[in-house]
Length: 480
View 1: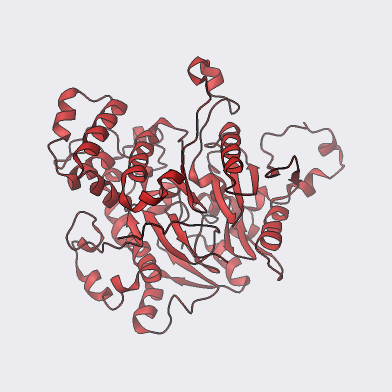
View 2: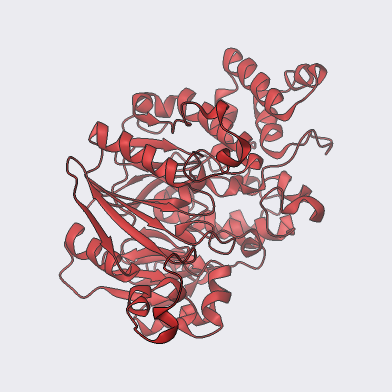
């Protein structure tokens, strides 16, 4: 059982101790081409390959770093079991870690409570517009199977009741831990409404979050949202939507919020008022990125690698330098460029604001001023900043990395030019299988590893348009 007071994240790169994940479920195998875009999935995937040859390596790596007793010395036996029972939250042979925690397991556990079960079934059926008979049908399943149905949208006999939740593997988007508080999301798309509702029930009802319930933050809608016109509801200045991929806890008292395709300025403003009002953080930086499908969230265009290193997309970097050019083209260009990155920083208790011309200037300030780095701040660029590889590899999540500890990240193996850039920056790159073999042989260990990029197999995972950063919701990290 997770200790009830163990919920704290104050950096992006402190040693990771606990996180929430969700392994690819049977719903991903039900995505059809005609609905993929509506369900916010970029492509149809081969589920067995995604699980067995890719995501399972992600889980094994996480366990070796966070809960090694579950896996150390057992890899050969785990890999020899073709049924994969070790990875299935509904099976008795499940690894059942209290440090690498699957959302499905938590959902099944709260569904054991008859009162919670009745309310959640009714809520889901209302959202999905199910019949009264369907509501009674769901009540007949045990908690473990019901959790699978509510996530996958399908019954054990493969009959589909409602849409799957293919994006539930991206647990980062359902919420974010800010110091000892939890900020729940408000999804921008209706396809993620059920995700948000399930998450809400888990955080408010599961015992492991009992001591944190007073610290759960929900983002309010516009007070009179029901009076707004359809056009007003679509406006960034009235609509309140936020997803976790747009929120980064970059330093103990400094939060970054991205305004993007999925997170609105109104929501960022609401979050700022709540966090400053409660004294949870002292500094909030709002980063407005272009509303483009290929960007989506700020963590798709940059993430932190170590205290003095960041990976980012060159196309949104050093824009301030370009803007200062005084040639004819730039002089007569429209002043308001919707594709221009904009950055503004706010400080609690003052009217003080600060703008940054460039993303690098902001990231360097975080490393130097907030994290106390004295060594030079380094930047690794997607695709090694070579055309057209920067954009190509950003599309397959070259900038979306999860730091397991300072300077040790896990990301996709397919972004060759970005990996070259990491090697040039002095990093070792190693495939997950080879690293796990090293751990088993005692050649290296998570504790001794430094400046390493762990390459995760990604042919199917990358089709989903989310990387290792997206596939994680850290709930406990070491501080600096």
